[in-house]
Structures are given as structure tokens and as C-alpha cells.
Length: 111
Length: 113
Image (cartoon, rainbow over all chains, first blue to last red; front, top):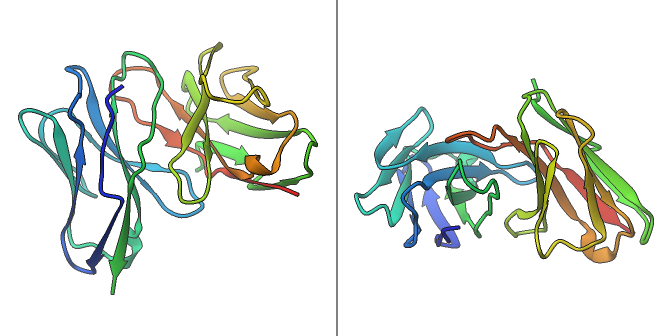
């Protein structure tokens, strides 16, 4: 299972774009990159998933360079309600069903 | 509508008194997971089921057991809770096919007195 490394914490201000980068140097060919968001006292919830290049949905964008050894979650114009922990996971869905969470990034949005 | 339901939301038990946490799902997913999450830490995988196949993590204490009587329900049994078992317990489901994401319940916060 590919290991991921993220910053432990980040601060930003309302209205800013926030980029959280995740390093996954030993990602395997079949691995996908998935990001989850977790608010206090709640279970994590899916944000976005990608394999290569760029993926965008109504919540975020995910940028994956050609070598796929890192990925960047981009949150446009954050608000106070985006304060949460963000987890980057690398996963091979058709293989072992173990899904292991790394330490995550604690994002704190300031007014 | 909640798709992964965990009951109860808060559970208080006494040191050494067995406790069972429950999880149900309406998604008909074939994979179900139990995670333990302590304050300011990432969720830690305890075990998971692929259909009826049970997969235990090597470092999950023997004190933790699980049952999955059917597709919809999964239980976490803690045979003799210690103070160190106080945590949030999260249940998640997933369809075990390509690219499928995890769906989590709201968790059960366990306190051990």
C-alpha cells in the first residue's frame, strides 16, 4: 500500500484558494488517489478522486502530475465551514480492500 | 437519508463490561469496515468484511471482535473494554469494485468509566 505524506496543518483566510499537496512517491500503476474531508465528531466524507491530470467537481479540483508521485487538492474560495481535516489516500480498488488513512492535514480557515 | 447508520451515537460502558456497537447500511455494499479514531488522530482500521470474509488487521487487539450476520448489518464487540478503548468508532461501507468510495456513518463515541 502506497504511503502518503501531507502537511500536518495549514491556515488560510476566508475567500482564499487553498491548495493541499500530498506526496505518494511509491504509488503503483493501478492506484487511484482519493481525498476525504472530516469535520469534528463526524465520519470522513468523500471529496474527490482521480487517476491522472485534473479532476474537478462542485467542491474541489484535484491536480495530478504526469509522474503521479504527488497530488494537490484545490479548494476554491474557502469559507469558515471548510475548517476540517483532509485525508489523502492512495488505493487500488480492485486489489486488497484494506483502506488505510494517513495522518491528514488539519485546515483552519480564519475570518 | 442516512445510508450508513451507527447506533448508538454515544455509548458509556464500565471498565471490563462487554459492549456492542452496531452498524447498518442501506447501500447493499459488499465491504464493511470498522475504524477506531482517537482524539486528533487518523482513523485506524480494525477489520473489514468482504461479504462474509473477515479480514483482521494484525495489530487489532483480541479484545475486539466483529460479526456480520447479513449484508446490511455489522457489529463490533469489545469483550472487556479498557480505558484505552475510549474512542470514536466509525463504520464504513464500500462496493468492492473499481474506484468506489467509502461511505461512513456518523460514528459511535465510546466512553469507558
